[in-house]
Length: 430
Image 1: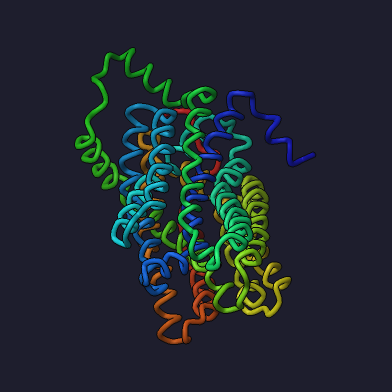
Image 2: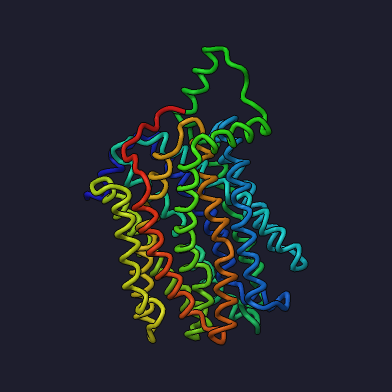
């Protein structure tokens, strides 16, 4: 019953806003993670190695800062709600384009464009959510919102597993020959636009800002080139804060992508598991991730953002042997549950922590761009892991993934502890 208490603090309008933003982030992540469950199948279709196919993950992640900047500008100028609808339509469109890519270069371009759309969703959705919800439940809903990312992974695992079982009876090559249909399914999130259009209201903070500007008879919002110029001026003004958030997000993204992007491939190649079994193990891990985000997000209201993040990240390290070196499906699932509980427990605090540290005038841009620049710095993680595994470990991913968690978890704890905290900051103005 205590878990339901934060929901009781919301009115109907706030619940609809949160649901839309949560689903937007979940379905965005769902579209991204579908690729991680069929990397080897894509490689077989285009006759490419895993290392080369992993470049599609890199380009998706590398283009996300451009999306954060572009859609952040739209959100500051035209509102969070309209921008969210445009964003959802875009990432669904480029997901569908991936399904019909006739060649590897076209597929790569489709994934890069998908990355632009993916990069915009987090900043816009987080701003709309946190500007709408009451301050006293901000930590809980920050954790729940961020776990939309792993919910998307959970849905992707379920869809890939069920799809693998289905096509195994229809085609001799099964999953490897039918992966394009996964990306067709991935275009269905576009239907969410109709819900946002009919049921979601604009951010009260953005509306108040627009009314204030109108009352003062200020000039219309500036074009994008002026927005970028002013944004760069703000980066210079808040340079230390922006640099800190970018480094923090580099460490966070290295931790999450280091444990997730090649995990399905690791289970298939290192442990010889079938697609449905891989799906089941991954789903158990994502359940742990959702619980970790909720619990740690809530605990951050009591113990502070920095302390909760650092403790969760450090507790991921003892889980490495179970997660990467177990020899049974049950123990692999237990390890996946525990490590994702800790990794995503730390991640669950990120939306509220970044928005509390961001300058009010650019709250839809500042956290999102810092997040996605950090993501850009970590974007070759999957390529590096695949390359190191092929060169030093005969293709085995377990040693590389283990070292990744050890190093990066320590980095997350260190960087977080050295940075500022603004728990409870006022997010009602822009």
